Each structure stands twice: as structure tokens, then as C-alpha cells.
Image (cartoon, rainbow, N blue to C red; front, side):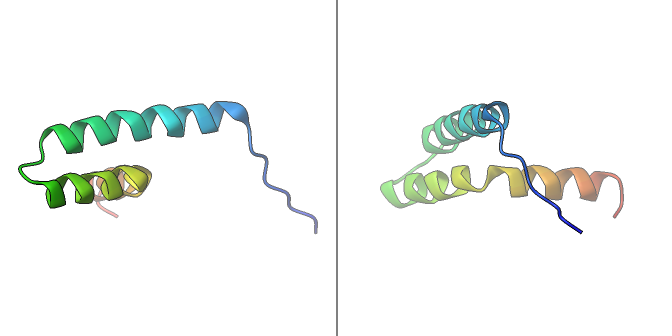
Length: 60
């Protein structure tokens, strides 16, 4: 069985825009340099927060 993943430019663009938006949100709400750094790191993994929130809302 041959399963291949496709990487499209559209998904990269959505992730990139989401990263920029999350970085701006987290960094603008930071109260110190270290909180800004933590916000940047959170922005890198924003899809994980999105999936976790969605699954917790539907009760899984």
C-alpha cells in the first residue's frame, strides 16, 4: 500500500498567515520579553491549540 502525503502551497500559506497572526496576537499581549518569547513559541504550534480547542468543544 503506497500512501503519499501532498504538500500544497495553499496549506503552507494558511499556516504562514496563521503563524503571523498568532505571533502578533501573543507578542502584543506579552508583558515582558520572556512572555513575548513564549508567545513566539506558541505561535509556532498554533494548529495544536486549534485542534485541542476544537476536540474539547465536541467532547472528545
